[in-house]
Image (cartoon, rainbow, N blue to C red; front, side, top):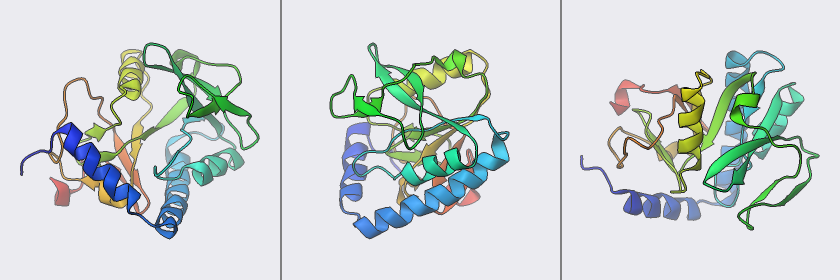
Length: 205
């Protein structure tokens, strides 16, 4: 199997997202909320911190999952884009005030910002992706924000696992799309129907 180059793969995955129905997206969001909360409870001590993100557009919906995490007693933080393609983090609850951030089309929390090093009880990172493969490869949107963040997190010795959040059809066999040494790998993949540790699953090797 020949790996798709990044540009072509992004186009293909984005097209498939646009073709999904509202009902399919709603079902997917419910599945992510159920499985994501169950695995957070396995991995993160009660009251610990989960780094999530606020989904936009055709991304797999994270709102229901983030609300469930808050209700279950977890601290939820979400990213804020900073100059230099870097992320800082703000606390989030369903009542959090949002405002346009560095990229005007994206709404972000307006509260105090934290660096990764400040999140001493961070136990899980939920990472947006267009696709993820069974070797841990992740395809982002090309900005490099999460690649930089995950590289810094690991350099600091933080062992919190990173899980790519994708639709079921976006979890693909290893080698389906190009990756480079600068693309930070993930430790797990969360889809509406499954949580998979990666490298994983003989059917995708």
